Each structure stands twice: as C-alpha cells, then as structure tokens.
Length: 117
Image (cartoon, rainbow, N blue to C red; front, side, top):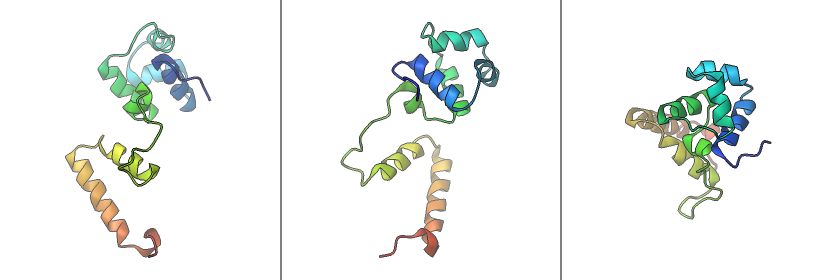
C-alpha cells in the first residue's frame, strides 16, 4: 500500500487504489491535472468543495481522506463493525438515516440475516 502520512499522499493513494490517473480524477472533479499534481505533492490544499467531490469520486469517507479515522474502537461500541456502521450513518441526511433504519429493520425479519439465539 502507499504511504499515507499527508493529505497529498492520501489523495494519491486513494486515487491509485481507485484505478484513476491524475487526469481522470481531475476531469471527474472539474479541476486541472496540474492542480491534482499540486495536491498530491502537498503544494496546495483542496477547498472544502473539492474535498467533497474527492470523497465522492474516490468512494471514501472524509475522515479517511483527512486522516481522522480512528485506529481503535471506542469502548461504547460492541465491535469494529458497529462502530463503522454508526460512523457511516453520520454522512446520511435524515431521510437517508430513516431509510437505512428501515432496511436494517426489514433484514431482521429474514431468518437468513439474523443471529441464531
């Protein structure tokens, strides 16, 4: 995997992981290829609007791109999956959160998706 200590390194690493060239990423977020190059070399920082486009195109969370993802599971969560699920739900608006809850509730009714007690 790529070294991901700086924002630029994370942009480059997640871009490569997504299989995108600098040109393809630049086109996808409507900036120049040279600006992507400056981001990756930590010569410039993306605007908040550009960060939003980056996480959408790279299909990652803003916490992950900004290097804020916690390495451990806080004690209030049962396990890493529960922690990750709740973190992802934060990125949904109220309608998305309601829909996610409906989907999970529906899955509970199907035996093949439930834990045997």
